Length: 92
Image (cartoon, rainbow, N blue to C red):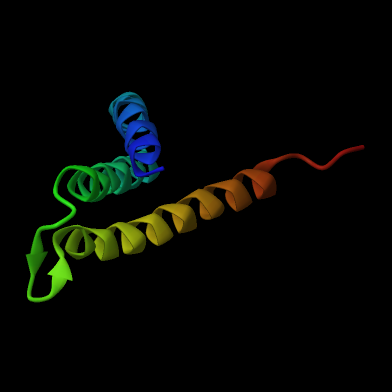
């Protein structure tokens, strides 16, 4: 399962980086950063699962910032969605 998730994150990262490059919208930069952290987390989990620092697996040190970044990215996504709903003209 970890390898599948690593593949998914690796394939999504360049797409969102490209979206940020084309639009310069901060939400795409945040999503790119989140996917990059997830690639690093799952890469460490898949390729170095036994590396432990201070009794904690190495991938956990990156996983927590990835969770925080993911929560921030989802917040930006929701804000964008609510703003687009508010800008939409009412149905007649």
